[in-house]
Image 1 (cartoon, one colour):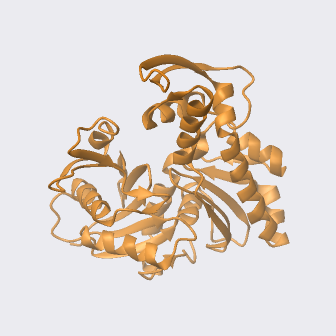
Image 2 (cartoon, rainbow, N blue to C red; image 1 turned 60 degrees about the vertical axis):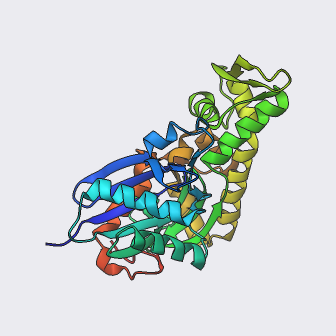
Length: 337
């Protein structure tokens, strides 16, 4: 008997775990609450997320991944160990683990992921680039000699890649994704309304009325924050027009990233993309109007993949079936399917 094969989408905002033969078995926020004095982990995932911005002085709720890479190694290791144990139980045989990483990460950042997974209990660690995993999860046959473009918008990074014959021909990773969208909303309201809101409130605005292309009907949402001048709590209304103004610059940066990748793409593959279209994956890609914005600016059809949030995790899981094709320790590319 051998240990489980596990695929992990190590996201800045959410961690998804895929078990070979079972599918996605865990989806939790990548948040850890620790005691500042003892460094003891008090809560992980959903329980820890509830504590964000609400903890007493001796407890901090933090996210150990930033912009798609590990920012706090020790906490990431503890978080991975918690999730692996939750999925596997008390395992006799250590699992083989495949972890997603953004394209264009450094060797040091790759090593940090491998080391963290090894110390968390992995028997063997494989890496796969997020755009490759996203393409597989979106149902694209990446082994064929056709160009496919993926725009994977996660929590920390937006990975843009042109994929052909199992590898990324051209790719770019932008630090403009879900977290930056939230930050943009916080900054906009602070500057234009003189009101401070929390991270979770900004995320609610983004999900409910956020847009990157003007809505035909203005939507409204009532939220709570703190008035800077009086220092008192205040309830106020935000419109989708304000959300659009806040997020417009982020949308422009993603369009610019897509343009730059298309400019470097060989003509034959560009022709394939104009015919087959651009695929959007990732939770951040579900923001209203991003597909219309990209379509308008590039003139290429844009499609949002089915179950976009899970594409990377599902693709990682499918790649587990071809684990024999991979060599550990590198940014992996699936050679064939």
